[in-house]
Image: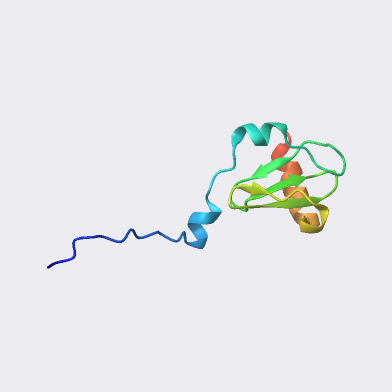
Amino acid sequence: MKNNHKIPVTKVATENETKEQNINKELLAILVCPLCAGNLIYDKPKQELICLFDSLAYPIKNAKPYMLENHARTLTLAEKDALKSAKKPN
């Protein structure tokens, strides 16, 4: 007798697919920096939420922001300058 039962295969997301998961836009609208309560900039390619005032970038992993200071990385001066100049209206 032939076994016709198929076992479901679960696809494991690659690193690029995981990085490109979008964070909930409603969540983005209410999140603020946990240190200064300032606005955050969403860096989609790097999957980070950035606070220019504190020069910190909070990581987003699996569409979840990690909003603790010990998870954040410090922005370089070049990164901060680039973000500031991108924000300025012409």
